[in-house]
Amino acid sequence: MVYDQLKLQSQLCFRLYTVSRLVTQTYYPMLENLGYYLSSVSCIDGSLGGRQPKGDGLAHRLYLDSNTMTPLVQRMAQLGLVDRVKGEKDGRETYVSLTERGKALQEKAKDIPSCMVEKNCLRTKKSLFNSREIATDLDRLIARLSGQRSKEKEEALAKMREERLASKRNRK
Image (cartoon, rainbow, N blue to C red; front, side, top):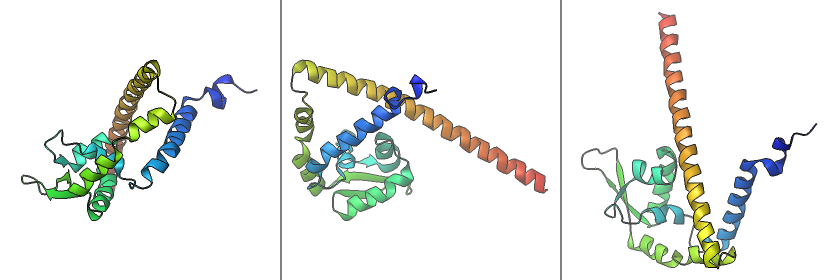
């Protein structure tokens, strides 16, 4: 017996995966000549004084772990898109700001969002409004899932710590 809730068309994750894949494929030709660091470069928008902490700032805004962000920022620095500066109070913290080359990349990419709207036939005011509603709903879902994931990670870390302590106690 096949349950309706198990059919592919009933799965939210399938729709989200498919939309993500197709949107990425639609973006690809527009990003191909600009490099693939646009999402990271776009997050460095100067709203925090032009310099943002890599870990808590960029990693948080991109929903990435700091250890995932490090090689990305290093590569962007090698390409001359960002400058990295160690924190004055805490030398472990890295602050990132756009270089002139990074700002030029933003300038080249500024029309991509409107191109995506046109490519996806969201030209009418009503459709554009609906795309904003969809974006708002997705933002809520991202926040909820991100919070849930953070909680699960913390619980897993706490469990690992408890197991280590128990293991140490058993060895004594």
